[in-house]
Image 1 (cartoon, rainbow, N blue to C red):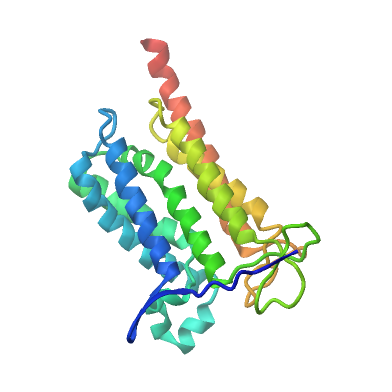
Image 2: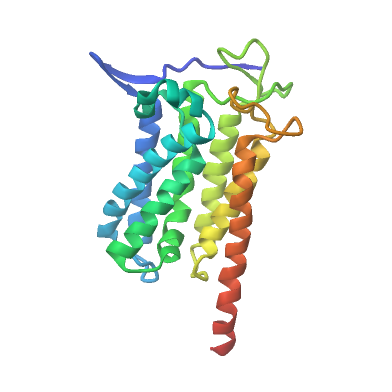
Length: 267
């Protein structure tokens, strides 16, 4: 059993100004995207130049923050938004939905691909997908620092006692997600995309990889208390939202390789 280290969620206090670790994790994720994006953009098979990565990051960051915040209230806490509408602006309090953030990023990619690059949506989405898991992993570390989104009780030696969760050791599910959805998924996508792939294949693998990992981790993570389990005593909102991702990813992989097959046969 491990005691939660009681990390202060506020990293820096400058008078009335407070800089939270949660926000710093997002900033580090955006910086990692910018650095890795400039590296990837040097390859001639990508539709974007290193100089354009900063612009793409700006629109993508808006999509992450607005989509993640709006998605959280739509999927997980709609009643709270009705009673306290201004809470949607208080990002530092936590409460971000990955699935909402994903929709926001997809809108940003679609707009940037067509209005700025004049290229196909999946050409740019394939460029973006391998860098997304770094931000996901850092966001989960932010959840851990906030002491939120802990897991179910466990008797495993790394079970952790979280403040506000009683004296029972629990799965540190935030760290599971940081490792699997962050580091592991990044390595899979970065390696897979290191060689030219059919258009849409990298995006499809991202959807399948994240959807499957998130679905599995939900079995050891407690659902949001305002929702609880949706069915069968185990089905969570996170799993419900991940199933369309898996289906879309499998369909996209099939489409990418089926579309590429005739071209390969004719070459």
